[in-house]
Each structure stands twice: as structure tokens, then as C-alpha cells.
Length: 330
Ligand SMILES: NC(=O)c1ccc[n+]([C@@H]2O[C@H](COP(=O)([O-])OP(=O)(O)OC[C@H]3O[C@@H](n4cnc5c(N)ncnc54)[C@H](O)[C@@H]3O)[C@@H](O)[C@H]2O)c1
Ligand SMILES: O=c1ccn([C@@H]2O[C@H](COP(=O)(O)OP(=O)(O)O[C@H]3O[C@H](CO)[C@H](O)[C@H](O)[C@H]3O)[C@@H](O)[C@H]2O)c(=O)[nH]1
Image 1: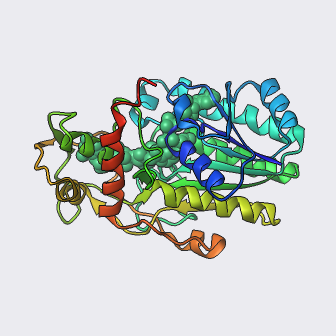
Image 2 (image 1 turned 180 degrees about the vertical axis):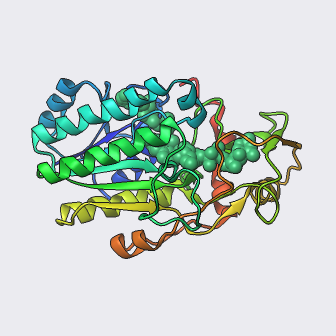
């Protein structure tokens, strides 16, 4: 039996492949169209198939050839502001192509499906920490495209012998502690990556988007989760599904938030570099605070955080950023 990891050449997917291989699950096949991913990010002996998840025939052939019993679906487009500019492109890549993949799974009898959802399904939550039962009101096409895939899975799981875990990630950060993968996309927008680039002189400065939010220091609060802890949550979800558990929707965060200024302090502290920080206007669509209620994932999966110290997350991200320059041309 093989696990199919879509988007396995990307940031989080490449850590998933490492987590599977590290525990001895060697039958791993990756599908990635390399639109933002990297061939080198797929660790051996995982097989990389360069294909599009929307190609239903190709997905069915692959599922049959590798006897896939579980799909972990990371492939998608992830930049929230881009989704506002190109909503139909986001609905195509995230919703329409996920539908094709789900149909391939159903037609081939794959019973286990894990889906990368997002805290963006909550929009601007009125209460923090935000629980899985909170009102779902995405404010971007990105968030809507992911919520629509959650809905398809819910309905497909009623009609077919398919069980799924939708994991709603909060802010994913950090890198493989052994230095084998990390966030590599050029022109990244994520705060910790951008701050590490500033600390290493790859950017002239960091801009803080908004200092007048109703938070203790006026900057936005987010729940940053280490990518290795997140990958481990997927392993546990896979084990639960294979053991016969029913479908679940789970937040992935630590239940603790840090402000933008606290993150900047951590990056300055860990790097020892006092890089330039400018105050800028609010970025449209940013909720003031987004922190996970993280009890359900602990009780349902027995998941425990291992790298939840902000300085550890930053140190891993910084180490990866230092090692990155030589790799991107590969
Ligand atoms: N990074 C975060 O903070 C975050 C937060 C919430 C949810 N997510 C979700 O996690 C998943 C992975 O995100 P990431 O940060 O690793 O992004 P990423 O861009 O690094 O990885 C996505 C991968 O999918 C591939 N891909 C995209 N469209 C494809 C298609 N149609 N067919 C085949 N491959 C395709 C890309 O080439 C890339 O390798 C995404 O679904 C994203 O929405 C990420
Ligand atoms: O240069 C920067 C970059 C970010 N920020 C701030 O830092 C916080 C975190 O921003 P990120 O861009 O790192 O992350 P988001 O919270 O916007 O986005 C995250 O959550 C979203 C759901 O809300 C999506 O899932 C997305 O993929 C995921 O990274 C925000 O307040 C943002 O305004 C800055 O001040 N300066």
C-alpha cells in the first residue's frame, strides 16, 4: 500500500514526505506540477510524478499502479491576496482540481483522505481561540476555495466509503530540524520567512502591516505552528483513518498567539541582527487575532507539540534560510 502525497515538492508536503520516510513508511508517491515546488525537495526513495492533480485519468492510473490506500492532499495555490486578484484561478486550482482528485479516489476505492485546509475558513473570528464549530465565513476566495473542498469531502464521505481528516492549519513556519527542507518559495509573504530574509540581508527591511489593531501592542496576533509538528499531526491522522476512525475536522495550532512585534523580537534575538523595521499601513483582509482552539487535535489524535517555542521555530527557519541560496537553482 502506498501513500499519495500531492504537492509533495512544496513547503509542507516535502516535510510530510520526510516524516513518512523517517518512520519507515517507504511506499510514498508524490504528485506535483512543480508550479511552486522543487524537484530536489522530494526526498528519496519517494517517487515524484510530475502531473496535475486535476488530471483525473492520470490520478486513477497512478492510484492503481502504486496501490494507493491514502491520499494526503497539499497541492494548491496559497497566496491570499493573489486569490482576490484571480478568484477563478484559485477556484480552479483549489476547488475544481480537488474535486477531480476526490473523484479519482472514490472511483478507485481509496478510503483515506487527508486535506490541507486553513484557518482562513473562519474569516474574521469574533472569539479567540477559535474552535472548529465556530461560524465559517471566509473573507477571501482562497478561504472559500478551501471551504468548498471541505464541503465536497463531507458530502462525498456520506455517499461513498471514503473517510477524511480536514486539518485547518494556522500559521505554518519553521523548517526541518535536520536541515533537509524548509520554505523555499521566492517572493514569500509569510512573516517569519520575510523576517529571516531581512535578518540575513536578503531584504533591506521588514514592514509591519498595521500598528493600530485592538491588541496589546497594536500588531496582529497569530498562532505559529512548526511544520514538523504539523507533519506529525498528519501521520497520526493517517494512522487513525487506517484504524477505522470516522471523518474529522481539526484545527492545527498551539493555542498560543504571538504579535508581529513579538515575532520580530524573536528573529532579532535568535539571529543577533538588528534589522530595519518600518511601520506600514494595515494589509487588507488581516484579522486582528487568529489563535487556534487546539484541544480537539490533542484529544482525537493524541498529538503533542514538540517544537512550539517561538525561538525554536525561528531558529529552524533561520538555519534553513541560511542554507537556501545554493539550492534554488537546483
Ligand atoms: N503555508 C501555510 O501557512 C498554510 C496555511 C494553511 C494552509 N496551507 C495549505 O497547505 C498546502 C501546502 O502549502 P505550502 O505552504 O506547502 O505551499 P507550496 O506552494 O509550497 O506547496 C504547494 C505544492 O503544490 C504544487 N501544486 C500546486 N497546484 C498543483 C496542481 N494543480 N497539481 C499538482 N501540484 C500542484 C506546487 O507545485 C507546490 O509544490 C496548501 O494546500 C495550502 O493551502 C498552507
Ligand atoms: O512582511 C510582513 C508579513 C506579514 N506581516 C503580518 O504578519 C502577520 C502574519 O502574516 P502572514 O502573511 O505570515 O500570515 P497570514 O496570517 O496572513 O496567513 C496565514 O493564514 C492564512 C489564513 O488566515 C493562510 O492560510 C495563509 O496561507 C497563512 O500563511 C499578519 O498580521 C501580517 O500583516 C507583516 O506585518 N509584515
